[in-house]
Image (cartoon, rainbow, N blue to C red; front, top):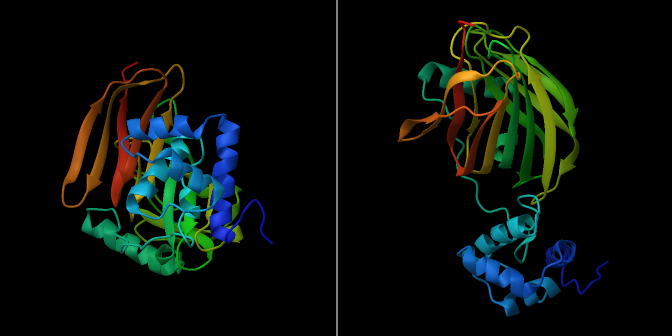
Length: 303
């Protein structure tokens, strides 16, 4: 059953979501038009009116770029409008995944862990965005990582999410996964080296093709590292719209040095020094991947 001028289930959902977002934001089509022009993704007022009513759908590459801008202007979650755009649910094509590790031994270990966890979901998902909130100890090492991710099912309904973790410092073995939201821990596998391990999260409810879901979990090491270079990074096997990492330090124990880094092929690692202000560090990337991005830091051990 359709209403609100629906011309089809997808067209109706886009128009209805767009219309409600405009009303909630309290803006006009003329206001949106001006902001789209300023952002370099111009769309006429007439076209915006067609999109709002459901008479037409944004389908061209330029229109879909404008939809991304509209999500920002209307304060919507990333992908909220984009996944509804087009004459059918637009998922696009998936590139072949690439393990974002330059070290041959770690890449081989990660490939084996992926095989042992036996998840085929990597061929069926697109990471829209991921946020890592990292809690550091007083001596600067990672205590726990809270992850929030928005993921889209591309070819088939999505039932699970696979993850691979690479230990740093002297931390060995698999960690603990808990405080899950929208999912639950299903299985784990640890490489015999103790450096690489993986786990699979079973979704509370499957995601239909073209739909997105938000999931959260916390990861903590059983024995936090106590030596080596403190760091945290996130890797993506395909391009991701957004990656955000924030490291929180105790108020009375802040780093004296930090740098952010990213590694992509064939560029290799690019390092940028960071000035530490306040009790946290943030790294943000938009349209990043495949590759990995992260931050390293050093505490004042002489205090």
